[in-house]
Length: 255
Image (tube, rainbow, N blue to C red; front, side, top):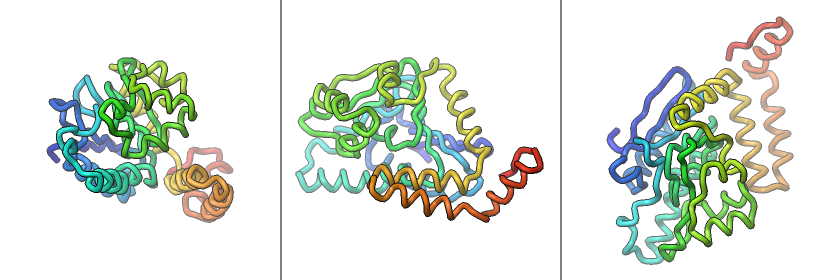
């Protein structure tokens, strides 16, 4: 795949941005490659969870490739934002299976935005995160101004974006930006174990959880209705029949 690597381990897929010489910076090619991989994985019933990480020990994704967009016009800049969000960031957020970001170093700018569109984030203890775009005279363009306040609150998000300062993995955990911080050498083992726990459960029900939860985030007035519709849709599915039958038979379900 060149700029990205894909490894399948049973029901878990590991998707790696592979540009360590550029600290895994995002450019058009990387975004298109990730889009194709996400489309493929989201449609593969054998894959139950996806881990997204970066190659090497220094960076998850250290941001967008500045050299690629430095000379853009306002129209080109808006198009870059719109296409990137549609092809990758929104596509991951609306996936039917959980994406887990394994943040193994710097997650800055577009890199942090990529981690934030994942459903779960686990960071190594050496990870550093931030949205430093204002130091370049621009703002986050891949959903950062919207997702960061949802995760850590308005005041903290504005502080992160307006100071352009990085925060540590430990601070990110305290603020709720990441689910957990682990030793660098334990990062992939921890995320794979979490992905496997997810894979043991009903993929149909998990897809409905993701859909209903996102509906409430996007429009709080419709979130409860979306949950009710998704709840009803689970009934009499093959997986619900198996789950309830296993419960009564005092055994683990097989999904």
